[in-house]
Amino acid sequence: MREITIDDLAPALEKGATLVDVREVNEYREGHIPGAVNIPMGRLTSRLDELDRSRPVYVVCASGNRSSAMTDVLTSAGFDAVNVAGGTAAWTRAGRPTER
Image (cartoon, rainbow, N blue to C red; front, side):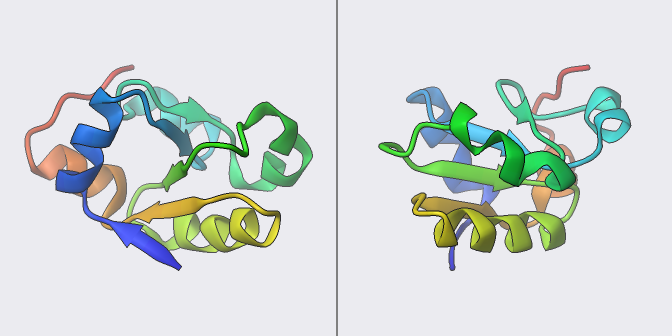
């Protein structure tokens, strides 16, 4: 499984990378990385058609556990999926902006 840090994610987002937040809707609403699309992990497999298979898909959750599992799901489905280590918690601890 491919994995990056939040420091590597930031420049990818500036270039228009796809970021999927697999947390539940209420968690996402409490604060998420700007530009992240919320697809809760329980709905991910039924919404694969919403993602572009020709580009890397970065996957994030609160800490990296759920996103790690969903990165494996996406990879198995033929996506170039990348887990974001540390998740939104690491993003927030680093003082990076979040949206509500």
